[in-house]
Figure 1 (cartoon, one colour):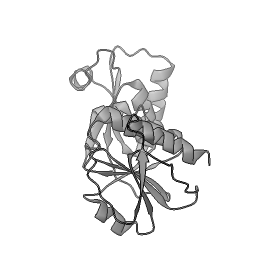
Figure 2 (cartoon, rainbow, N blue to C red; figure 1 turned 45 degrees about the vertical axis):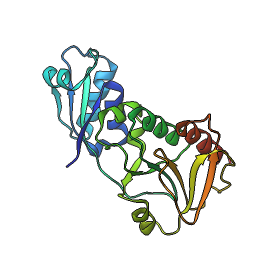
Figure 3 (cartoon, one colour; figure 1 turned 60 degrees about the vertical axis):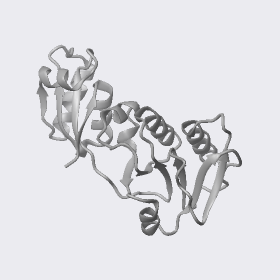
Length: 215
């Protein structure tokens, strides 16, 4: 079982609202005011039969910030990809960068995320950097791109490098946008899309997702 933690009121609420089946227990601090947010936490925990426990020691141990008033213990579950449009990240080892990409993905309705050689999904920094987008994604991990291709045979692949044109795929087509953070992939039967050297892959992700979203 892969266990991690959503640290803070905002992330705890996001977990309860979007993935309550993954939340094992919610801890709250004694200093948490009994206001609307507290009542909402309490209500959602009762609704989904999730333990709601006061534990200052555990919160202080887990959180790097002093103003952390709630923590959700979650089970990180890999899921089947639900759509025909996938974002694939290879070699993304920086939590902030990958978290930014997840926020961009969700903003433009890309929910199916494939990870190869990336940091673990249990990384609390990744969950925090996603600002809640983590709980709206369907994640699947593969050891190699070949393993992914063998399972999703009909996907048209677009590998983003440095410099050129954006893909012209339509919303109902099966395609995978590949962002190679280590610049190691050399893919057969793949459209190589070059991006400007001045643009990071995280920025490219936002531009491309927006481009396809408005098509």
